[in-house]
Length: 133
Image (cartoon, rainbow, N blue to C red; front, side, top):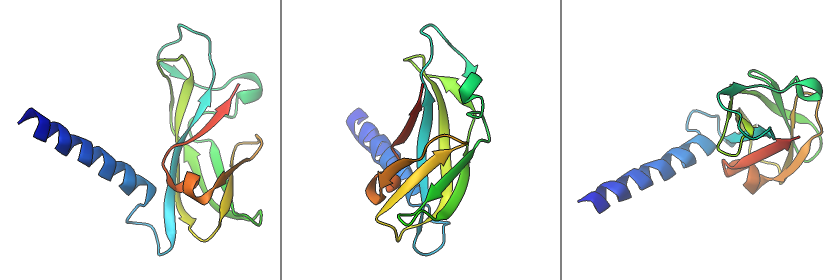
C-alpha cells in the first residue's frame, strides 16, 4: 500500500512540474518558463536573502526578460522571494508566463545582468537555473 501511495505522489509531482512548464491557462502556442536564480553565498547562512552590491537588483520582484532567437523581447516576468538552500546559495523562484513556443532558442535576463542563451527545450523543462556570484 505504501508503494502505491508513493507512486501516486511521485506521479502527482511530475504532473505538477509538467503543468507549470506547460501552463493550461496560457494562450495557444505559449508556455510558462519556470526556474530559479541563484546567488552563491557564504556557508552557514539561513533564512531569507537578497542580492547586495553589484547584485542588489536581484531581489523579489526583479524583472525577468525573455528574448527570442531574433533578439526581440517576447515575454516578461519576475522572481519571487529569496531563501538560502542547503548549499548556502540564495535561491529565487523565477516565473514567466505566455512565452511564445515558436523560437528555437531564447535568452533570459534578470535585471541588468547578461543574458543567458538557452534552447527551447531548456526553457520548457522547468529546470532553468541562472547563477550569479
